[in-house]
Image 1 (cartoon, rainbow over the protein chains, first blue to last red):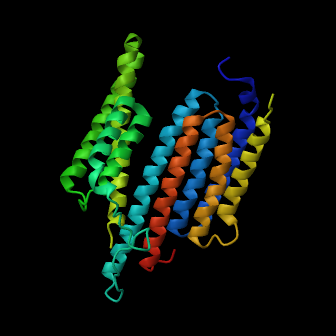
Image 2 (cartoon, rainbow over the protein chains, first blue to last red; image 1 turned 180 degrees about the vertical axis):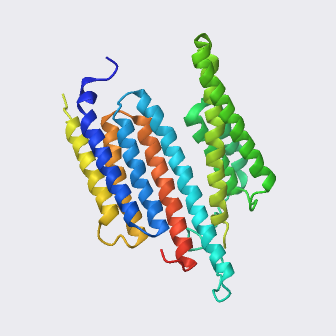
Image 3 (cartoon, rainbow over the protein chains, first blue to last red; image 1 turned 90 degrees about the horizontal axis):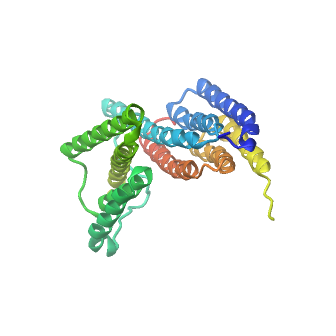
Length: 226
Length: 88
């Protein structure tokens, strides 16, 4: 009744494809020894997850794929940082190794010396963040995060003070609380669905915007290298 | 009326995803992490086709965005580790 007839006939092939892809990915992870390769292969297992979830074929599938993808992104970011930090430790402990200056994704020095980067960003970032707050939800979070990234890329502030990182973590916690309260109200008092919808949407906005902003601030470290 | 065979796209997407994951796991030249990262893109394109058949627009757009960001993160890790002289 809720699922179209074509999607029902596509269910079994999609599930089997997901199982096959997941099996290939996990076997390759089991065989490999090097951590970086294992990190790349987790991507394949994530794709298998998307197959299995998308086989549901309704809006529920879409609602489950989005957080899965975002969590996978955060996980990849965290593990790659851990690998880099551990390798740096190893080099620091070895007195014979010569520690070169830290490298970046851009081989040449990548300086954004455009006039618009010094004059416009305040206004454009403000517009983007305002429009993102107006949109709310996942899309709004992405737009507002884009505004934060633009501001971080164009301003010359180097590094991130500890206080600010703590503040972003606190905002993230408040966002989780809003989301969970909204979710609870959906089930306890369904007549207040609009309130709970807006609680969840604003929570998601804060969450996504702060995540995207953090990624932008991390990339800023790379771009500023001369 | 223009007819697009949805099942053709669907099975081609499944085929691409399986071939891409085999290529990532045991394909030629995967001892180089850059080649392995590129091979994951083949499987990602297959998943994109499957999501297209299911009309999951938001999921498709998010998958595209996260694939790009994950590729950037992986390249950053590969380059840093290689310049530090780790065996990658």
